[in-house]
Length: 441
Image 1 (cartoon, rainbow, N blue to C red):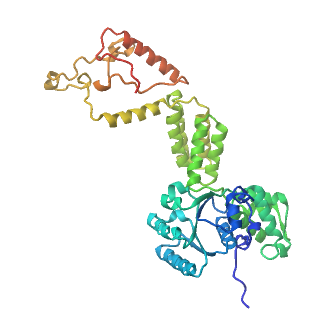
Image 2 (image 1 turned 180 degrees about the horizontal axis):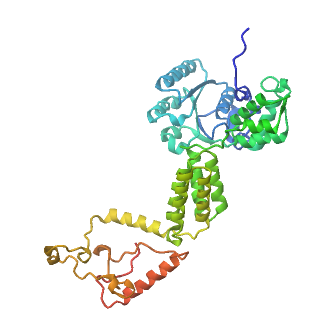
Image 3 (image 1 turned 60 degrees about the vertical axis):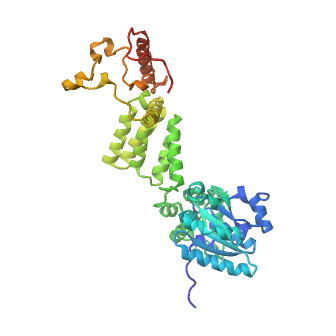
């Protein structure tokens, strides 16, 4: 008789009863609405949103079984309209026989709008109980029409203790795991695998399976664990929710003046495989947006870190980026330039093409001089402190506007003092091209 086809440990250890399911107690504990719906056999259409390896597919299968419903699974990565149509036809056939069908769509966010819309009539008329699984934020990736017909459940990364329990089960299980082999491992070694798995049950079991292949004399040693973890990286989706969550956490830690938090999120991103040059570019942005002129040294420091990464690569470049991130976190903060720039861009869009005042125009020809170009312009260097009190450098319609308001932190304290002094001189000037009345933008 031919040998049974190989199945990865993660597939063999898939729970067959809800009682075997590990994790997600925030939605599956007794008394929770989803658990009550499952126990009563009143399943409803839903979207399960969570990271890889937390049991979305497994839970969908278990719910279908608990509700005496048939289970059809398609993947948005591999399927198209043809597969959708075939699944619906099959569900319609069994509906006529009085049988319920759970249609599970993995990676549902990968379907386009028209493909997502194709499910709507059959969800509406009860042909299928729709369960979609996604690692991406449904608010951004799924149609509102589909979301309105399905409840969203958030599945969380598994805790270390949950993964430890799963690994211990795999070692003990004689039918599906390594029980017959008598494979042994210390709890400390299994915890090392659980930590490396980063909340992902599939990853934890895959690492254990590699360790089992490398084990000598039935013992999973620390050396075996180290070999099994080679190339293992923390979860980091370079184009998805985790990516933007982590860069957001890094930016907010810098803005909040927490060097420990900032360095932690930097390390998480680098550890997960993020391109350090991407981080370097974002760090330069932080220098202008959140530190600004409160500490003008921040911007060149960040540019230098970027340059080091380009010149030397890793790990030397990463240390330079870390230095820049730590500096930004402890530097005085100012978003005054950032706010002024956004306000001025908005003003330009709203006010259109305002003329350059005549006194600010060059007059290289006789005709231009006759037209008044450059008339009454005052050369600042000819005045005390190189400042012409009362002069205006904005279009006449905007002469009263003030966009840049320095904060009372870092170097901008001195900048603010200087601007205050200049405005006092403006108000005391015996002449002004346009009488200024202080108006907030």
